[in-house]
Length: 240
Image (spheres, rainbow, N blue to C red):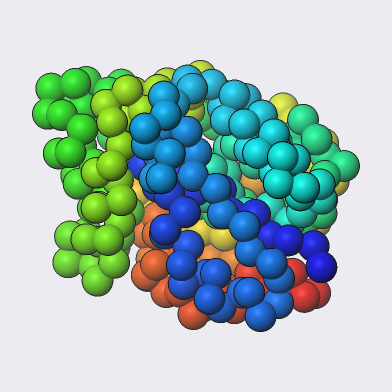
């Protein structure tokens, strides 16, 4: 059975996939990672390059004896998995790009990356974590899953916040999209404040074997806002 590897995004962690693990383990072996600087790896310094994150995940999976896998990346994690499939295409079976894009400067984001970096330096890591986590939900702080997500984001040190923003800002995968040969699913919440439709459409239209799922009335955390629908979409894709 080919395992499914989840790669979280900026200020995320493996804990955010608990609902997906419970639902999908009936079908696949689920593996999650905590990227350096985030989640359970918050004590580690985060690199400031997407390629460094990608190599870290590939090396970690190799050390665990996981050679070939399905791959799901969310947000910054979606950039990381695009880099992973460019580095090791033979290791990736199916690819899920969720709430992400190929343009690292994040045009159309709720605020420019430089603004986020400046505010993080001025306001501190904890306030930044809670403020940005609110943008991931359609209902912002009133969303049922907000507090758990914000608490996870609060583990992130200022070093990792700045490094993660630098990594995204300096990265682009646009020129390599047409080279992705894996069967791909693109998932987007229709009120995403981080990645606008233009980024999603670019993935869908440029990757050769890509399908699209738009989840209504969700922002950047559709897997927490509508988990049953999200899980069913992923399950159907892996089974097709």
